[in-house]
Image 1 (cartoon, rainbow, N blue to C red):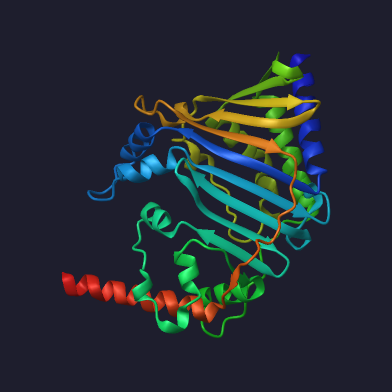
Image 2 (image 1 turned 30 degrees about the horizontal axis):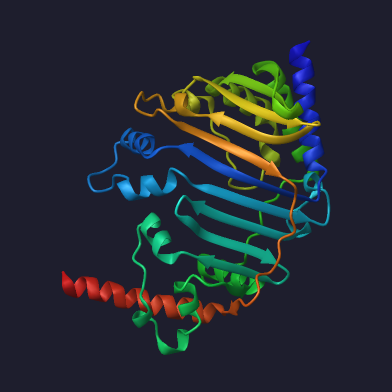
Length: 326
């Protein structure tokens, strides 16, 4: 009885979330530098390719804040229905990067030096920029800039396409296939996941869901394999053979509900690492009231030619300097 009641409560909470036209949530990486280093070491990186200490420290406290706004309920929305999006990546030292899509523009600001360190690429200095790329100095200063979204998407498509090629249609999943996938997921969860409920503070309720990782994934993929022909091109499903070496440790997700609404999900992934040195590795998602993404005031408009030309010239100068020094 507890199994059915808990599962139904979670179903209703997710359905309520899908009925909203705007959702906001924060994703926390709940880990520490030592665990990230141990996890990296278990992949046998090449000498010199190991995760640097400063990067492990940077990401150990990373948070990602996301807001999505649509004209329709989120559960019924397609790509063209979204009217606003915002994403911000923060660390314990401050905001790393943030972007917002509002109206016809995409707005971006970043801590370029911290981002360059995290991604492992050199950051051009002001003196490396050509005179005509003065707007890019705003980028290096961490100020807001904006780019026409359609222009940016068109440039990205042209850069990734073969000369003379016709743009391929974007992969989509029709409503019928989406519903079938959701039903398959629900059936798999009902069979393979153990639910438990417990009370919490301030009238909240905790529902824990526990399942062996490989078993859950294998069973779910088995359910949706007959639907593979309806999936967009490039979405090939892994076979049972592909998954045979995946860890089968039991993973527990803790869902917090208040007044029937989902407020937090936390998952402990440390066991999946199968490495005793990975002491702390989890994800926490905190839901909040949906916000409306707004355009930041005073953003400097850039065009794609200015961005590509300015940073391209700066990076060539940087490479030339490096080669000369070598």
